[in-house]
Image: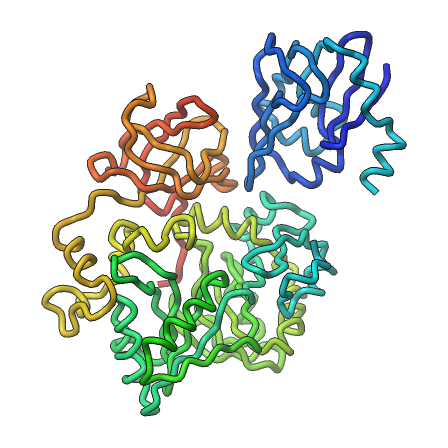
Length: 121
Length: 378
């Protein structure tokens, strides 16, 4: 498994042709406590940059974008009752969608943990 | 962020940074959106304990008649607002609006009567326009901005206990009373009012002493700093209007459900009926009703329905009847809360409407305001 990061503050944990996608601790801290998460349904085909989920804090709604092209396999059903786990454990229990990659070569454009740490500063 | 040189700072800027404030631009000021605990925890703290807000970005203005008589300042201000200002007794405060000739609202404000002048508290984003409006229209008055005054709000069920610990005169004050209190050696002009639906106080203090007073209040373990994020969710649950969202130049006080702030003396048949901008329209609406009303809304589910969401009479989103003007997740109700304008036939409490959210319909029931009961000390 390999961990990638995007400049939209998402992480992908890639295993073969599937990836688990979530938001980084930095993004979770910026958004504040979440009150609602809605993922697009399994089977949805998305291009890199299209929304896979919307997360809502008290104050605002934010889209979570597909880092690469692919198909949504599963949304994290636990978030319906407990959206706050995205804030408290964004890189674990607070994962958002599972995703099947249609163009794994796009991963080459993403950051590794060290590059992301430098990006966030 | 906190170091953006184009933004103005309030006198409490360094305090916000010390307490981990997440600073955001708001009405030209760098203001704390939240502190380390976050909006939900801050909101709940105000409903259960006491929260301290920096609202120094708001405009404080002294209005003095050239004659020196406060009665003349009140008569003058009544040319611009529909409230009865003449009857406002010294050391009392009243809510009103600056109106325009179409009956719309230029700004909403608080007016405090003093022995010799009026003190106004206006919205930050409107204050320059408000000052210019008064200077242009009230040539019998001197309009004096008070930028050297800071404004704090102490809100919540423990606010009285906290403030009375510094000056016992805080305790017997009633809602909208105004009194000079001594907080740790500093004279502050304090009103028993606020923007949260809770009991509480707004504290006008010299900018030079503001941080000293704030730190004294924060020395009480019941008191936490609260940011603009929780201020917004608290006022929304309390059914209080945000200028620029729920009221603006296109909404009248009657459409906004603010007719309680227009006293009998200014209505048809009153001693000083009309005489303010847009009076013909507003008095007609008071007599004959309006085509739309501001209402509370309780969307079902957990997804917040926000400003701009269209409202429909039917689940198929075919019959538009209004629009959401404020919406968020209400931490007290643990559910989405909203306000909006709805065509009068659909504006009764209990009517089931549908809000459009990301292309789909969300059932939303019209609810009476406030959405969380107010706890003012009447």
